[in-house]
View 1 (cartoon, helix red, strand yellow):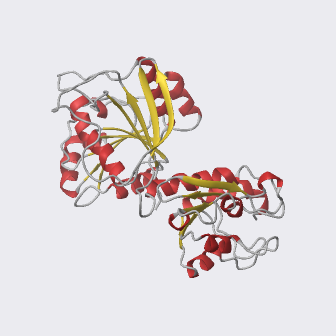
View 2: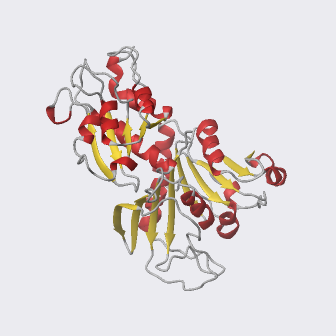
View 3: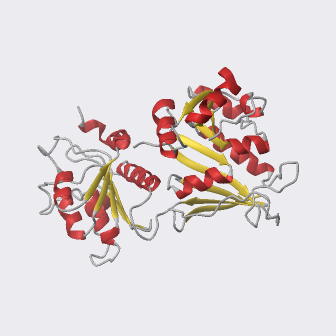
Length: 377
């Protein structure tokens, strides 16, 4: 099921608070970081906040730099990203800044909240009911399929961030740490209690911006069980990016592959024709870098931009066979192998017959095909 790329963005005090309990909003970030946030806003298709944040902070959620808005227009995009809020009750103040600045607005609510929200807002915003209760997966699917949102920035509040991380629906967390303490237990915190699917997050960047520190994290998986939905999308995107690194060929597809342990650790990656080998396949190249007795293999997932081959002339064992031999029991791919070089290819069938779970995410098919355009009709 296709979802947008979900980027969580927040700033917190050293003791983990989003704000204090005073009448005015506590400014945790710095001018340079506010500009960075503006740049991120300009890069996304939609920005989402909870209705509680609208009530507490009365934000405008604009792309402030005229140059960035001009770039969006030149690219054929709206001047401002779509503004989205979520409310179970439908209790919304039609006078809030959120409704009177920027471009289009969208409200997700429940069956009970929809009538109340529509009555309050009139034609100011589109109101979408998600059913008896708020359903984040339905919300993300609707944003992707009905509104064309591919990158979603989530700016709060704490309940929204907590729910997305706990359900394994966040692709990235951008967290700014401010050099101050709040110390008030009544103040709002960024994350609430509960079971999180992300396990230990992976730090991808840390950067000083004036007197604050930006830390970027990617959620990984818990110690057991399948990777979160967001992880599947992230790693399959990586596999498709690796496919673009392949030396071009008129006789073989360009394919990328990544092997990822159950805890989200990358074990190896590879791509077709890697290191000058004219016949090596992506899955083969990646698996060759992992010790055959690595205990993490049975719980790992192979992400491949193209369905692993079931037959090949260049090696005695096809990639589907190598995966079965490795002990890996899960494969995620973007594109079923066409009959260009092998008739009736069915690597997925071979894997499934061997007890491997095969997941296809067709929304990445175009990315997987991109470096192979010259081979396709």
